Image (tube, rainbow, N blue to C red; front, side, top):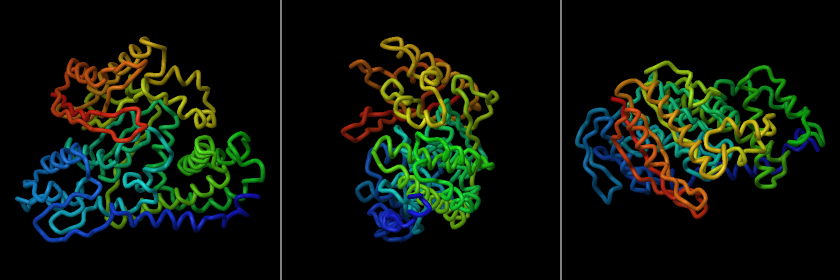
Length: 430
């Protein structure tokens, strides 16, 4: 049975089920819209989030007093409130007005409050919390038109959150899979009409028995699409189906069809919310480059937000082997390019530290004076011993010339998490 003939398989039921999730407790507006106060979003639960919320207010020059069991803040100023309502990450009500971020997170087809718009696309391990990244962009003082760099762009969270705030983003990664998913999440909004126009044509070319990750004809059909951004979108749908099949044993055809519908809806939601809120979207440039040798000019970047790879704790090559193989890469070759997965035993840690030293030197070089670098990093366990990655990062960044201005503990909940705690480190270049 082809996908074209299988259009009605559980389609409506799945999409309706996903849409029903939007009634989750995290999106309700039970609070009074009275003026003179700030009310946190319901999903703000941890101490580090409260710390970031207050730093965000301070960076936007908002005077406040914490009241009502830390959930509600009293405003002591009437200045910059419109700007706060447009930019804040942790508040749903500002002076009686629902914030832009509250409206943005309504566009969510997943069960996680942090996977709205296109954030959910592709199951990449070690993702940022997008809410935290939005806060970082405010805390380090980036404005519309400024450039933020993420030299380990990963799943593209920094790029998407910067885009929503009108901040330009340069995303760097050595992984072609990371580059692809980051481009799809941020660029598909520009070609959503073209994506929808060829949907039926693409599905008509899915023939019985050929639509799976081992036979190539259907993937060749996708690769023949002329528009690079449209092609990337359909390639990403294909890889999500590959992942669903490899990780969860799901039917490949059904996964492709379901995720195609949901991904199109997410991109449409992105377009619609941008129009509804009159957002001036930032520009994104996602590049297959190396953090150890950045292509940017000296002192050309206003801010940096990144989370270096936990490759000692998580083997990104093995984890995404199925997708990398479909993209045509040899794992043994690509492994030699990645940070932290080369070598064995103590040699691996030494190589990782050397790679990160080069990366931090490059970050310092491209950052403008007085610019900030926010780095989320945690200690890993390797060969049953703790690797002091946080301490190494602080020491080496300070040796390079950075000044540490904030160090916030971020506890990670979850029985199966490799990391149990991360640190939010905010450095400034003098």
